[in-house]
Length: 135
Image 1 (spheres, rainbow, N blue to C red):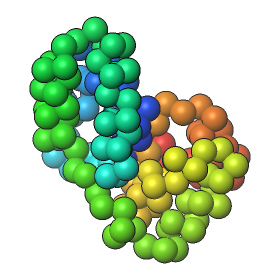
Image 2: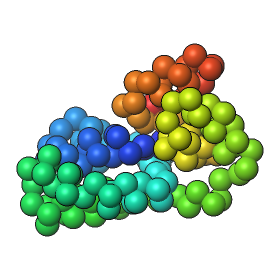
Image 3: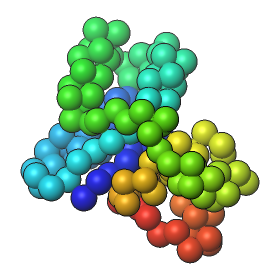
Image 4: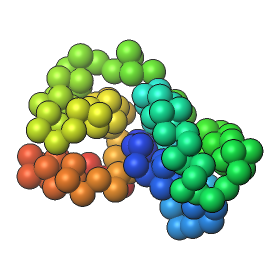
């Protein structure tokens, strides 16, 4: 199974030193499960670096260690390899919710995977449009 992790789940995993989400990702022993995210996530990490450090109550060094561990488990996918067809479909699905979700939805479609998100507004909108693609 291919699972695409969006920004809010990734941040939730990073913000808690211990926790269910991190354990779910790191301890997933199903060898057929692969985790992916978009390169765009790295921009978001740099953009919100100070906020992540502050809210996590970890040192910057600890945050970098967590980031390193997570990125060993998650494959970064270059969005330029996503087909125009899947980008267009993702745009149509997300344009009324949040355009920052487009790459993650497009990647989910591209990989025929499941989207791991905590974004209730996105989930509701996609389900209403007949897209129940969630992990």
